[in-house]
Image 1 (cartoon, rainbow, N blue to C red):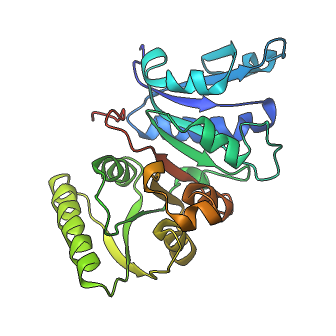
Image 2 (image 1 turned 180 degrees about the vertical axis):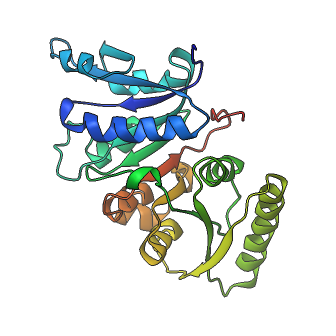
Length: 264
């Protein structure tokens, strides 16, 4: 049967192919049997003949990754991209965390970033998924994707709540939780709450990752207009997050008005 929605395995070389494809296949199968496409983009003249060695449809392009990724939903029917991050990779490699985040900076689909040692845990990954709820405006897309991992992949969902002392921040966080509760209740998705530290100059996602150690963290990328002095000094939160993930997968969502999500 022809598939019209796909998980796109964004693979730079054969070295990362097995891991990224395994994750893409796992997600595609559990997300109501979506298709899988292997996407490779290489500079002019680079041999990418290895992409024919895998039992999935593939697209091999000459050009730049950023242009190809911007076309994922329209050209490939992509609803999720999977890529690898390797802190030891050279800066020119898309697997270098800084290069990866810059390349996916305009991506219209969710993108799942895995480490080179990722394994699917016998088909039970992710056992636990964490979403941070702080004082900022909540993202419906973030909640939608968290619900997919709970509903389709059987993951235990936890809402990480930074422990605010400021009454105004606490009020806004409670409003976000009321919205989240109504949303998950409408889908019959259960979740638990967990308090995490509220550290100055630290991203709540980084704190949640360190204190809860989930199999998967769902993270909404920071709008560059919202970066503060600490971010400019320490680096973007997403870059710091990948640096402290120990290879654990992170699902990133860019802040856009036209994110492509599943319709199930």
